[in-house]
Image (cartoon, rainbow, N blue to C red):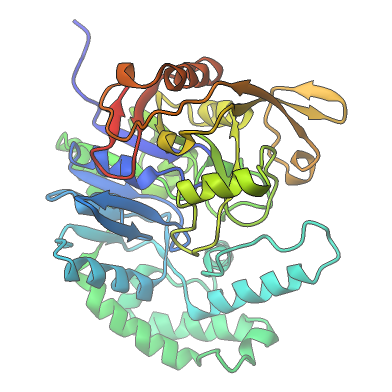
Length: 433
């Protein structure tokens, strides 16, 4: 007989440019798992979950923290702003959330004040550059410079260093000495001794949570515990496979799980992709299906499309099926969770992109290079919209006919079934499709 037991490991990844609603989907799955693992990114990510009408915005802590009894693991592939992490822990505890299950990899890297200053410096330089692409549009949270230091090795600070004051002083003295003169001479730049003292205090606060999470995850799986992997950012922002250089600084697709969490790729049994019923993008970069003007403003307002991390208004676009097919292929997803369908209520027609026109040639392949992607024109198809309220609907069959047709059209072109449909922000406003 076939094995019908649920998979031990599931991954949830974003299939667009982030902000797809991964936090809500992870929160839904978390109650079925013993641990949730965050494997990439830093405080540049933002996951919003609404539970019993209460809104939670998480940046570093896995969304599974809101599921009682579920262990929340920040793994080695992340870069951690320790002050933001402590702020997030204390904010959750102040709201009655138990954080005892939160653990942190001793191999994760630390974002220092120097990284944030360098991030801002580079963005200023790029903004003044003659290159028409200009600044990348980072969150200025120091994520890129922290990952760069990880590769440089000699100036990086890891979580384990927080427990060793001698190592801290050495690494921070180097980091300060090697920093560009503009950063070293900035009046806001703290001396390395001050940073070392502060991070040593942080280390004492976090010490009970710090462990080798690679062994922890292995122990959980060997004990047949169920583990959920939570991606930050999204596939089209992946450092290798996204719209480079307008990407984040880590592997934000499912391809980052193995290195970012310390497990073999053969142990990842199920991959679920999350996509919005339309597209959004924060900051700069190519966006083939972008909607300008009043209609874009209408969708932005209806979807409350403002960044969880930055507060910046998100750019709005039609659903890009070329990009979605690419992301589904790259991650080899088993299913799609489609979010924000309710936001399209009253939009008629609903348009979707089925191909690109590049210099007079039609292609159905996504182009990750930003300079080239900026030249494409979307080939759009119009589908009939729906006007009925859907936030209280509990089954796919009860959705308006045109909404059901939209879901079927997406499945046909993506080549992947839709597993869940979110019809509102609350945890319970989710249809099992």
